[in-house]
Image (tube, rainbow, N blue to C red):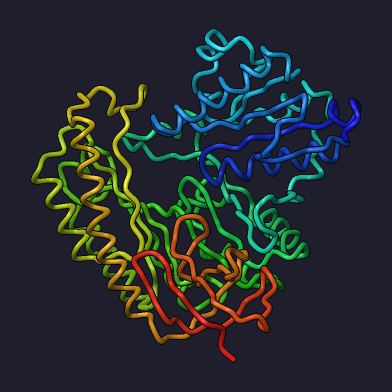
Length: 438
């Protein structure tokens, strides 16, 4: 049974939104633990007297989830089950004054860059020497590595620069230090994240430095996979492809959100790339790295997206046969330049278009996965579930991509976080099934 003192010294952190928020929460957890707090991340039970909610403010659905979570904990505070409630992250940064007025139960709201102020409110010291020594809350064999903050792009639909500010790269020496620390604690896969990976280095080195960063990270003992998320297609630096092909540790995987392919929509989105340039880029990627798996995201229902625009997008998906596709429905975000346009596509049409794209992608994914039957892959084992081990190939990122269900007999034991070689025996649209090679 918890004593009163133990409960009072416990803080629960609730993280909503993307992997970048996750890293922010991990940095906060690290600071709090070194200030002698007991911290729980995304707990099942509510026994702490202090709760911090790290919010997302990206699109309507994410904002709704964040507000509902704040209201849920505000009600607990009103009922006397919480002493302190703090809110941080993107939603808090963007709508601080509104939230303060509408949810007075919250003790304080903080922006995305205000961790020191939040710590001070908790009578905790911000320890600069801990930067780079993050305590991860993902499974111990993989971690996210945020290489920059903010974004300099001006996409008309995106509110991220309003919440995260301008692009700020983290120096290579600091990222190498972070990665060595992660590797020393058993991390085998690092997933590079940023609002825009390919811009990395332009602000502090005056040139794009992602290729050099990748080569430096590849030298670190213990790290076996390096995965790239969120590359921007316009002016894509193709020397990144040389590194993917040449460096064994860099996965043959690229997350490159394209958003659309119709020229009128791309222009209105301010994506700084054309349909023809996009086709050329995807062909170049596949030519330079023939074994690559590409993940992309598409945005449907943008203002004035015509049926013709959507048909062009469908044709693009069918032609390119991307290994992974996610689809978002347009969210009308105030203070973005697209907000001046009429949100002209009805919600039911947005939903219909999103479902139609995903149905096309499901067929493509099934076709791609069927070709993997009988082949052998190196798999990183993430967990055990229902008597089977669940892992991923280098072509699959956690949470969003295919999983490999590894069937074993009673005599076979696999340690979570180990690599194994398996043979694929079956496949459906979004999962592979395998047995361990003897």
